[in-house]
Length: 333
Image (cartoon, rainbow, N blue to C red; front, top):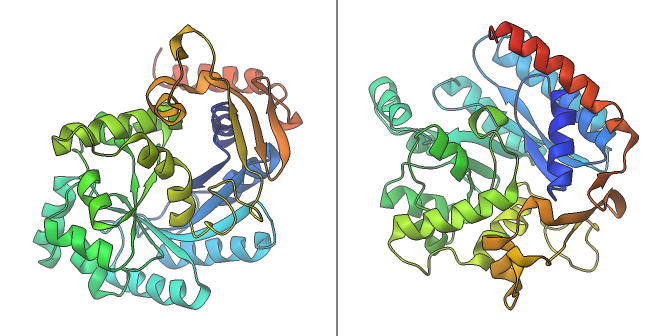
């Protein structure tokens, strides 16, 4: 139900594809397919047990079995998803490095999100997390470094040299007081920037219009340069940059002959968007998800005049009301 609710929010906000990394990926995958959304699912790896898996080997086994079962789904793709350097062992990282090369999979990992993460890595292994991953041959065009907030100049150059992508989640970084990612420097170095929301627990809104605007404004403030991350760059990070990070740039991310028709229509009308003389600037700095009118995924209409078209969303309001009451009771509210 949680993933289906997220899909409803994302589709109505113009999002056609998302990358998910958490426990019970099959439940998330089934919800995405029911919603008619394109989705990439992380084969999560973490060292501690959960209700989903017993240990790192069990996480990998279950995730790879899921990939085998759903590998032919046209709207689904998969990546390896070691949670973070502080929750994944060297042995697991080495296995992931081997599998990524053998299976041609992307690797999604939380990296340099907080200062505490880096301090812990230095204390436990004597090196910063990025260097630890480099030593295990994990840096390359298939690496998605999620957050990448605390980076030295040499680390920015290292990410660029290896063709890595950074998944920038500005609202999450603000809410968790993680810091400010050096996006202008990363972009200047040639690192592919993909824009993300992170999960609802560390953001609340799965809203790419909010993320575009926040990313563009923060980049300017951090760099001290009003030209940093212009509107076109922010829009690219929300579209083609994300597709590149997921290894899907040949299929989605831009309106190009031969690519899938994943499209979002935005109504540029109303006093809050007038006068419109620069559409790119308006999309990033003025428009919001409330201006999305129609959404297509793989050519199929999923939102018409802001109304969800898929039967999977029927009675969703009843289901979320039940969860709201249940969670409220647990919280004593």
